[in-house]
Image (cartoon, rainbow, N blue to C red):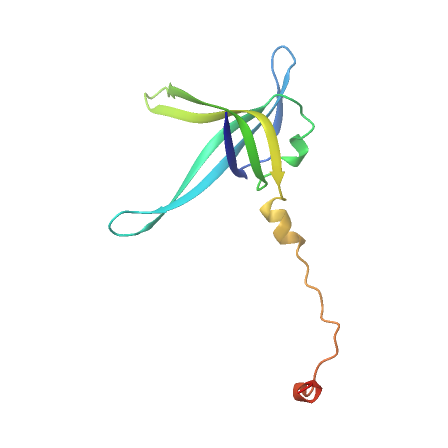
Length: 131
């Protein structure tokens, strides 16, 4: 079992299988950065992981784009060839536990409000000092 932490890349979708079982599907992005040897150049790396959660669909409305999640589950790799012969692969996580860490980035930025100052302006700040 693995623990992965990342941000959801798009709102989660609830899908149904042929036998009417429901699954919540979503993808997370895991961001990392490192310095190269020699030049010390900063490199950024993003890894995408496709996730499936079979335990219940009630959490789906909370799994919105930008939400930071901590996931516990079993990781697997899928590999295939496209019609043109190009090799493809994906990382998948069969999620058994989800922990939400905050709100989507866009929601928290738009929720910030400018609060007007209500204090009276200070005309001569040195007059109010106790020393």
